[in-house]
Amino acid sequence: MTDTPKSLLSLPQFAECNASVLRQAARAIGQLYDGHLAQAGLRGGQFSLLSRLRREGAMGVNALAAAAGMDRTTLSRVLKPLERDGLVEGVISPADRRARLLKLTALGEARFVEALPHWEAAQAAFETAYGVDEAARLRAMLRLMAPGGAASLQSGG
Image (cartoon, rainbow, N blue to C red; front, top):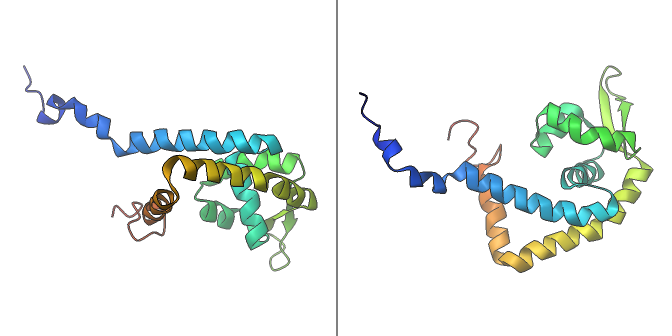
């Protein structure tokens, strides 16, 4: 008979699993933003991409994926309805005709402007529920863990 590892003897530690708690919180926050943004026909990830393209201009797929913190497969899934609905379009890069850039269309700009008050309402609802200062501290801590942050977990650090 094999001895049970000590780590299995204290299973309640899984209630403190960082990944599980973060995943649950991300799902709840995503639902909050999705609920508000649905009034403009968008989801949170779609609004984020429209916002980034509006702010930074046309971007290559790899650059947009990196900036959004998404892998290319996830980016493709989020972009598909935006391209289908004419909010984002792919254009040939003037610098390298082999490269494709993604850019916000006039319709995408209009949808962003329509969605912005709904995003602001979601932001306000979150900050009302959890506190403006607490929300700012949470964002700062999460940025540290994000790729490129001082405590980024990608390098095992």
